[in-house]
Length: 271
Image (cartoon, rainbow, N blue to C red; front, side, top):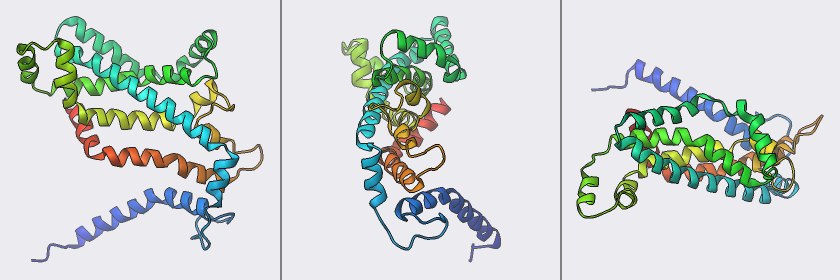
């Protein structure tokens, strides 16, 4: 029996059309990055060239910017994972009123856009002498990404059975040992989700690095790529070559962790 009907064909056509629409920015990006100085980004490139990548890397000093972005992102994600997972464990297991109140206070941070507190943040960072230092970004990102990470960890932990922890405690493990040896290994799916979400948010951020680092030597990739935009002209081939270089680490992180990302995110929302 032929199950391929007109309705199925229409739905497949719609999905293909949507896929082409979503892929069109990627096509334009690669077309300009590989197409030299062609003026129409929609026309397929006729002569491939990788000179835009080498020129963007050298002219925009993307090597040092890449290193700064990597240090800031890696340090911030490690801090967030450690602090959020440790904070979420008692919030998920302790059912007292104080625990619930602490959880809602942390969740209140999700409702506050960070740009509202940008001025006091800037003044504080300036007063403690960290303006222009990547350490200022690590502090800000760790605090800003903390509430969402705690939410994901807490809701995921609430769905885990407590019997393993009770058995470890009966064997003489301390609370710290129970968490590090029993609980945290079970958090791999949600940890992958937390890592991916935070890497994307921190790696792609433009405003905070521009304000707190400026356009000096210690700048991140988005700020370095922005330098290709002038007052009256923009070097679009170099911009898109830089963007292509910038998104490669994100793709690698996502494809490595993709099997656990949806599991952790779905379990966190369900919990």
